[in-house]
Length: 388
Length: 252
Ligand SMILES: Nc1ncnc2c1ncn2[C@@H]1O[C@H](COP(=O)(O)OP(=O)(O)OP(=O)(O)O)[C@@H](O)[C@H]1O
Ligand SMILES: [Mg+2]
Image (cartoon, each protein chain N blue to C red):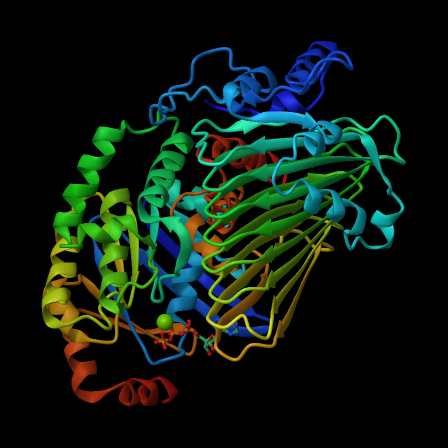
């Protein structure tokens, strides 16, 4: 599946229709109807149709599992009534989430806008699914999605957040023992919009959360993630790829809390900034007093592509345990002139040489995305840097 | 028409003059060696031929096959047939050797109005040239020069030269840091490419290399100029006596 970002740039009514067809997949058409999940390829075909079959070969997909019978999409009331495990915590976390001032302005979350996605214990969803966020009708209301995975449940979830207007979204992730969630977010915002989100995650023993996000566009985006590792062998991997276009501000904030011993976390950030684009990353690692044998790693690399672009990293370490493996590193640079010259000397034009170097720089993050989405983001990057 | 004609070349960096009236003519089928003390401007000359814009050309001209090189971008010079084997090859993390070479080949071909190379033909050529310079095939899967040993980097330069088959190859101290066997292999690679239609400019500190790559002409570059030109015997003389005697004669 070759994905072409160009179909996302609205060029005319036809594109717009196609785009909305994609976005509306899975959305209830009336209040009575329930939300449906959409397999990622169905959605991608609608969003990014390919006229000719692509020659890109992908591994054959495993036998599709009939996830319809397993996964549940519920309203908050339904979830409370059904006593979905973890729903109380999730509900409280919406009410108590430590949001910053700007995000506070968007509270309270519109109660009727809360959706619960529940994967019961031991259900392995092999096919990735896509949950479309609700579109906030009014900027004063936030949308919320609560994703709960029972013991040993597995899910790959794709969240394309297309912010067409100002929005705030809230996501709660609750992983029970041994559960695995791979979450890919496409955080794209229309020019001039303000887009914020907060993720509150709770990861139990031997469970694993992998969150990979792509940020581009809008006037300002600010996305915060707070994950609490609550059991031994709990793992969290967060990757963020931020492409600040001119006059674009992108801020990401991670608070990784090691509440239990022997848990592991990774933060992997790549930032690019163009002329007058600003990108920042604040990453906190908090290791509780008894969280011995913690492994926590953070790596952030930034590249300023044009004069006037700015990037910031702010690592914050709060480590109270004494037997831990922790590391953090941040690098900022611009395109390496010597490498550019070397490539040019071999016949590669300056523009292509830049592209090669930038692609190499972001590859470490691109590879964290679900394989079928990788080429989509690679294409988006090469489009974005074409004019450099 | 000579292949390369440099006339009265003056170049400076940050206002500091480095080349001060350099003249050099190289014909098709010839191998010229350039020797000279550290800091005399050899790499600067090589870099300028390849198109490094860190240096300002204040006077003079460089013609390649009758056309000014100075008007061309580095990648255009490469497409025209100019190649520089770097004294210090650059490490480029994240860009694989294969992707790099494929991009280079195809961008050069595109500039020449040719279709991209068939993948099978490309791979065949890679294997052939790797064998020529006895370059470990595993290096092709790594990032460009990253973690290569000093000797591997130099062989990798000769491998790239063999891949691109330039008309004019400037080898900047490709022999330094090589053990005897590697030196022989690199020289073999160069000699295998040598023909009546191409030319080599070999920068070296050691006469030893010139036993393997026998030059037609040897130049001495000092203080930003060619101060002496001779046959390969000049290299032997330099090896025995050092540079002082020429520098003295020059002063006199
Ligand atoms: N980019 C630069 N900026 C400042 N000075 C430079 C630059 N490039 C070269 N120089 C200076 O120009 C002079 C010539 O340098 P160059 O590298 O050409 O010498 P070389 O003959 O190749 O020496 P070696 O035998 O040590 O390789 C040196 O004094 C060097 O410091
Ligand atoms: Mg040198």
